Length: 190
Image (cartoon, rainbow, N blue to C red; front, side, top):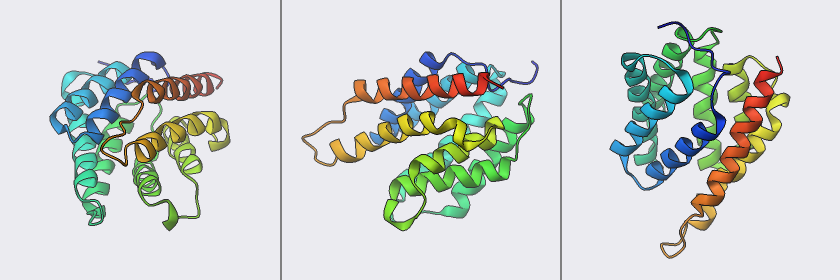
């Protein structure tokens, strides 16, 4: 199988899988998270099963480690898995990118989302910078992508704080569809 063109994907399908993945993450359904990560990578990247499994393994290990250790994050371990994930992705991509920078920026936005008061940089800016490295574009061209994604990310934090209030997953899905559509359009303009 050839290298993947990261710019070619079905944004609606990817957004729906992304929503399901987030839901599994927030509900501590880690086996489901791994399976959804495999599915989203297969749908978006069109890589063979072996490579897809390796990508899902490293990304899910990073996510699970980060999720379960809130307040006691093992940053070196999380970064190690994100670096391995992005290294594999870059090697299997038609347009290689700086995988170390991609991993660093991914962990940065995770942390900005979790601890916004710790950072001067906004979640939107961090999301745009992270995706810009992977797609080889200027962060400003991904402003709408980042805006919709950041808005979707805030819903579980605000609506899910109480056990009685459940996040509006339909709203999250709509925002993620807007985000992925915007990303798709932005990277097609090159």
